[in-house]
Image (cartoon, rainbow, N blue to C red; front, top):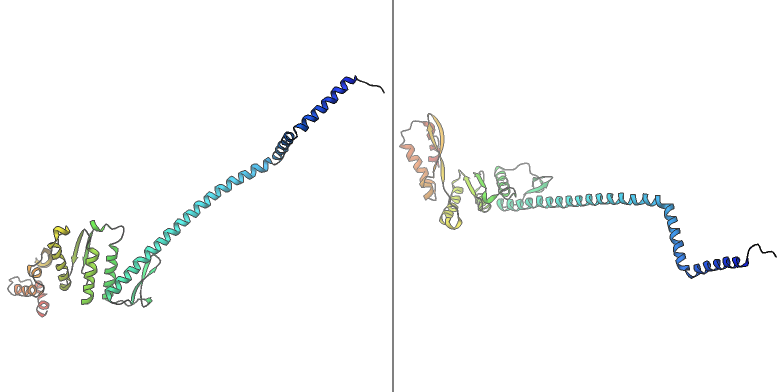
Length: 283
């Protein structure tokens, strides 16, 4: 057998192969780890474009999720506000119904919520024929209710009530005064106009009480009247202090008698100034 190269070289090469083999055997776990890393890198390289695309989709989905979450929060807020408005809209109707029942001493007339307002029903059916007294009661109670509006500053506000007992019977008149007194007791300034002496008497007693305890209540009440006069052949009116006869007596008869007496002894020839005297005399 012919040997083409020295035996020493062949042995060295063989030993080198054995050494490298032994090195890999001794570090098998490490070699496996390196092989896995290379395999993973190869797999990643093959799927890198797909991974980038999916990561981009994930970011877009996150943005859409944030938008949806914001929409859900906005809708939930709207739901809460609508439910609160419904409750706030329903509560005044319930309170008005309670007041109307107490005011009229019957519960056939009711406020029903409808859209953004109210509908008045009688025994569950839309009320078509409402008497003047019922209209007065409804309007007056609704007005008193509006004094609680959050946009009205009651302690610093000014309230004007013009003859709220028109077309009311005696029982409703006392109800009207009671509601008015309770709902306006905290108002900053109150003006009350009336032609009804029974109602005026209730107001007068209330105002006299205020004046009696004005230091304690930090309020003061005054009384005035509109007095008709002649002015060049035409009627006019002026504001004057309330006649003492109306202020001092519980009955209006003293004042009415004084008007008849003054008319009988007047030298004024303007006839229109005395048109009211027949009614006063008959009264």
